[in-house]
Length: 473
Image (cartoon, rainbow, N blue to C red; front, side, top):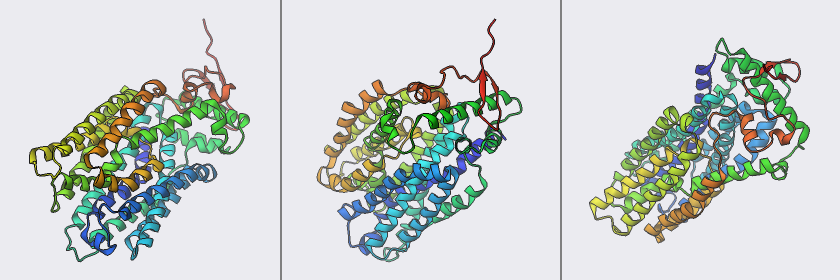
């Protein structure tokens, strides 16, 4: 079926990312609901609100940790379905909450599902994607996170127009996410498993059939055979040379380095401040003088801007300019925007200076645009650090005010920027097996480094394929 099926599959699976964006963004409007605050006897800057947000991220930590185990055991497709089912339960618990413990449990359950989906959806997408469009395919996950934020904001904004005496203000936005979650859970029954997982579990005929279904265009049979062989040989070498379990990730130098870089990306995305703004932007807008429902309207516009920028980037730029350079330029620009935001807030403490208030909103918008043009398409969720920021940010915004922005500025300049420049490598246009070579010897050095797509592949689908070097004149 080729590229169209490939993109359609990735887009449907990205509903899992939509759920992450929705369940994260929905609390922006929920914590601004007077009925919600009165029902739970709290305020928008209280530790209780921090706990409601941080328990979601705490659940995501465990969902991500168990994600790898569940994917290896049940496959990528079933893992996404399981995550969607759990998300449906979490939505019901949150929407039906009649005391604080119930909504906290609902947030934990929803967080676990989002962690599971955040782990499995990008893996499923990348293993199904053609190397030439992997940036676009995986970028769909981030795009759908943004779409989730947009939908949650406007659903929340519309619900917020109900009278303060109605719990519809917050119960409907929390329940709405059950619809896409149930759709994803059911729909994944008709989508294929990742070819790499099928080959890894010795379902070779199925793996070859799915590779053809995903990538065959009528004239690239040699590439299909070569891709199958490369995946099969790499997986067999990994099985032969590594012990089962997760400790091997810390023992093998190449894998240890990749684990470190993946962890750093998660940390760096959180220190851009993007999730703090996403969760608590209504508090920031109130500090700038936008009140009486205007803060919800501005938040709705904010949540539309980032996804539009991300769509432009993944469609026209990422597979041309790569990943590393945008991150470097992006972190510099985000830092400048945060400096400007901090300075503006320091000169507009009570939000009464209209010009500075508008400028403050502008620089917050700049952060989401720049993030979407740099970190967005390769964003990891960083659940552990998101949990920390979700818990402390309401108190920090209330007590530190404008000084809080400079915590992120200092980290970005002293840690993120040097690490991006000296530690990260470009992966543009490479297959997953070629990325293996980029970070050291392929499969612990036991496979040749000269497995290329232009070699002639001879594949025996019932066994291990082999490559024959092209004859030289």
